[in-house]
Length: 272
Image (cartoon, rainbow, N blue to C red; front, side):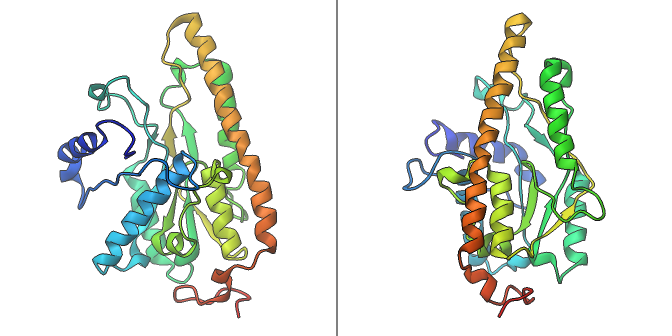
């Protein structure tokens, strides 16, 4: 939760009261506003939450290698708190997703510490509400993500939904929080890959993440045009991912201590 949002604590406690019985443990964090060097966005939010989770597991002597962190896009912003329980989350994952990643992680202990699990995404839940041009743009976006999901593919860039072992997150010092990390998903993929000097493993999770197309929430012609504007603004945000070109070039020439040390229980290829 964001500390700057009025009523954030009350909202979190209400969600825990409603859904807490369905989980082994359900907790929340409050991400402070205005931290030095941070840009507001998904990446800085995740960085804070992940660091808090790591502290909890370390304090309770848990085996971090057995803990997986799944990140996905958040939920629509309803006008009132009472609508939160009726508005759909932006991302829905099937129970099979968590079963698959658990089995994949346990079945390959050698590569598990350096593996990112990536599902395909499908914009399917509100396609009947949005303009055809928005639908087409998102279909092409899904196809781009699917391009690496074949048996001989080695580059599988995540799109908003992916899973990492907590040990990998801790070793690369979590998600970046600066203005160059706006494209959070590809940025974390590149950060892990650079830290491991190309030895990051990516595996397809054959349980697609169901997502919603951007929607203006307005009816009629005005809503149609507003949806096009919303999709254009979303594309502008995506274009900021171009900053990762400079991040990658810089990372190729910077020494990385993770490459030079024993990583978990395996030795990196080429590590001294």
